[in-house]
Image 1: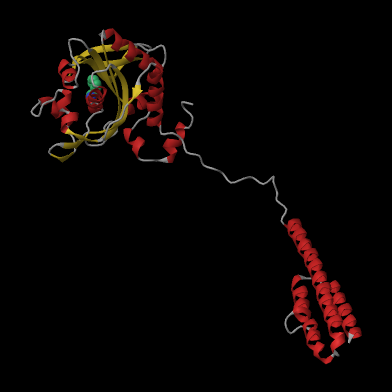
Image 2 (image 1 turned 120 degrees about the horizontal axis):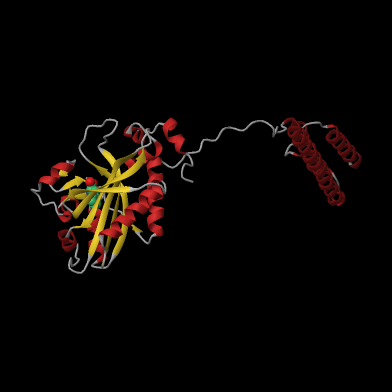
Length: 338
Ligand code: PHE
């Protein structure tokens, strides 16, 4: 029996040695080591042996099992390694192949203008404030000195949600909200955001657009401070060679009020002016409603159209380009400001 066992081990080891793939190795394992495999059958033969020979024989069978298991393990490792090497050999990566093109988005031109203006004013000590686009009539109009029956409301026809709620027609309600928040403390803010007015869309009109509001309230604020802030902003946006022109105008929330024009050089070399924003000294009624004593505090405010700036800066022929998400348009503004 021992001789048979030795023969069996030799045969198994030879077969393992000769195996040339993983399924072959598995087949050998099943044939020798599974429950009904040849080595296990040898265990069954124990019963045929005299009692005293059984432990020694049992041990030999176990040794045979371990020997074959070990041989299978070594062979399996070798085959797996060979297979891996073969795959690596076949799957050589060609690092010289061109890569896939990766499309990168860019900051929307309107947001570029906003960030640019914010950068300037934050550097001058202003805070950035925001307010809701769905606004109360109270903040949008009344606190801006436009009572319910005020005729100037007609200049800013809006989208009403109900009697007292509308899509804000300008960023000026953020003035009122911030004044109440600051509770009589001096303030300097800049408020960018979307505004809405009922309008038929065409190359120069949009029912939705963006504004940046500026508001300063402090003691000893004069019209000269307003002019200085406006000139700084215009030169920051359009270049140091620009000048501004102020024309008398009317807004219910400022007194006196001005319309601000920026200079440009016409084709024939002469100087022209284009209107870019409205501004003025904060009306005493607005100060009062916001909790400031108009005898102690003065202020100035301005409101500038973001599309207007972008159109002039980048020579854009149709305001609707800003809202139609055409990548051919948007991708032209990659890194314009940075
Ligand atoms: N709110 C005004 C508008 O939308 C602009 C403005 C703001 C004018 C602040 C003066 C002061 O037309």
